[in-house]
Length: 286
Image 1 (cartoon, rainbow, N blue to C red):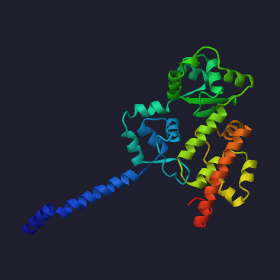
Image 2: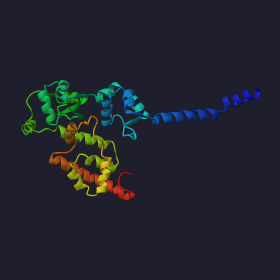
Image 3: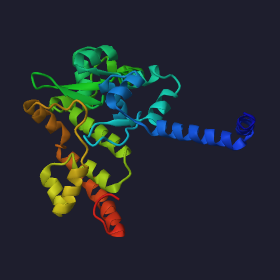
Image 4: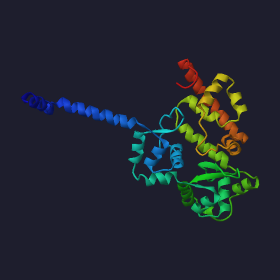
């Protein structure tokens, strides 16, 4: 009994015991921080729907972790804790990812009629953040509600009165800049999420027609690398073949000047990617 008391007393007073306990706590905290959660669990913890979480990732508000073997999205516990610790959570996060679908909903947020909203969007003043294909195979554009309110506050003169001459010319020509504006935003957001030159080249190649990619990348092995690194279709991209065919056209640059811009950007990105491969003696990302 005396020996037990002495041993217990030595443990209670030995500072190394506290050090070991602190180390265990640190390890546990590190393991918790690195734990990966699925999309459903992550969305629930952030108070978002699945589509809102996807939009938060798209906008760079929430960083996605490494994907599961199945390709499913996963999120690190540390990243969710970072987002939840931000000022104004969760209201601020919800406000930044809130989106409205279609002309009528967008017009109500902007405080204008549907025809004016359509003109402003088609002329490139409003940039969609996403799209849906409805049952009639028509494109329904999504807009960030916060951006519409900011536009209304910034450009009150465009909410009433006659259209500006450039807008009248665009409408007379039947122009619709929404697909191009969306592609520019989509590509820009994807490029912001990676610094790897091969991944950046893959993003740019993904919006070019196949003939342009073959011309820019004559090496079949390089085209395989770019195809493997190509970003997946955005959240909400339809699976039904007929609707997917409509949506697929939105993913590819179409006007000649737009194709030229992405082609020049791809050539520049490939120069950096090939330089990296020459320095590492490996083709593809390192």
